[in-house]
Each structure stands twice: as C-alpha cells, then as structure tokens.
Image (tube, rainbow, N blue to C red):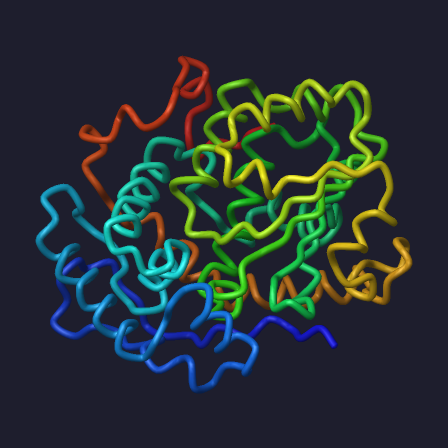
Length: 330
C-alpha cells in the first residue's frame, strides 16, 4: 500500500550562518524511516550514518566561511535537502545551494513571501485545488497532480502561480521521505486554453527549467504530461529543448490517464480519475501542513547572498522588474 508523507517536526530555526549551536534536527534520521526508504538512501544516494554526519558538518563549515553567503539556514534537515538531491556530491550540493540562494533573490516575485495566509495563496489551496500532493506511492516517491484547467488565468497571473508552486515545493522539501524517495509530477492538460499556454513568457519557462535542474533541491523521478492540446505542443517542445538529457529522459507525454497508471499507483489518483483519493481530504491535509510550516516558509526570506558573482546564472528581461514586489498583483 502507498504510505503517507511523514510529518515535519517543528524546531526553532535561524538563518545565522555561524551559530553557537547547530540544530541537529535530522542527523539520526535513517533509524526512524521505513525499510524501503533506508534501502533507497543506501542504494541510490550512498547514504550512511557516518556519511550523513560528516557531510552536514562539511556544509556548515563551508557556509560559515563563505565570502558571499550572509545568512542561511544551517540546520541538518535544510542542508540534507541539497546533499540528498546531489547524492552526497559535496561540490554539487554547494553549487546547488549557491544557485538556490541567488535564485530566491533574483526572482523575488516568484520565490519570496510564500505565505499560506495570503489571500491568493489561500484561494489556490482551498478553492482552486489545482495542485494536489497525493501521497507516497509503492516505490517510495511523492506523487503530485497538477490540473491545469483549474487555474483561472484571468484571475491568477504567472507570479501567483509561480509563488504558489514554490510554496508547495518548500512545504515538502524538509520531509525526509521526499528528500530520499524523490517526486513524480502528473500534469493534466485537458481543457487547457491558449491563456494557460501564454501565461508564462519564454524566459519564465527557460528559467524555471534551469531552476529545477540546477537550483532546487528536488529529486525529479518522473514528469507525466497528459492530454496536451495541439495549442500546447510548441510549449512542450520548448520544455524539452531547455531540459538537459537527464531531465528529458524523465519527461513523458501521454494521450490518456490510462497510460499514466502504468507508472504510478492508480489508487493514489483522485476519484474522478478512477482512484481512491478525495481532493477535499488532500486539501485539508495540505492546509494543515502549510499552517505548521508558515514560520519556516517566511524565514526563508531572511536568507541572503551577494548575487553579483552569480548574475550570469539566469536569463532576465526588463519585464522581470515590471511589478513591484509586495504589491497586490491582480
């Protein structure tokens, strides 16, 4: 049977880069995990108790002496996001963290103010229900469903949707089972309109793919794009052209949902797709998770890095600064 995502213990967190005491909130985590996730950690990540402790210490020492990082979370659960995403390649984990911090400041409209009590974020969770974290499948992976048709692009623009998506990412990044098992996304494009396809600019698409590949601490296992209409095929081709070989191999296009269940557990899908999951129950659990994570989500805005050395990472246009951060985006 599919298991549920583990809860994230609430711990006092800070962004002091060299604290007098480090928060040990995930150092001894494997003993409490299922046998399945212990096996995944060992076989896919090469994780052991000793390697985990040594790697976290190395990341902390690196952050403390980093000439450009000014403020950063240093608790073990946060640092293990990057170590696990890069299978304990220390150099790769450090580069990903630098890009992550830079990304958050470069695209502030997308990645800051991830407040679940914001009226737009609250509407997107409670009323729209366009993105549903369905749970962990038999392979130990977190499965999420995106229903494109649910998003009213006359009310929500690309900044709302980008911030909403990243708020959900951050709400699960600290989850140990997600860090180890990775994630699967199902994107249902049935009834998507030209407005949905034109919501994001070319630079938005390119930068989002770049962030997924190099700046976000996420283990993308599979992406299933279903029922993409003719008007969206150009966008699908763009996504593939921007994706590197490794990510491209994990993206699949399907004409029906029946094809998707060859890859994921059908019972995890909502009832309307022939599964057993009730969207209202998923939404209630998501609301609870976001409420308990709110302080940690807002704390992310206090992290700082000098972006100048990393300005070449992403393509930007003048339009990226058209809307002043913090204002109502209608």
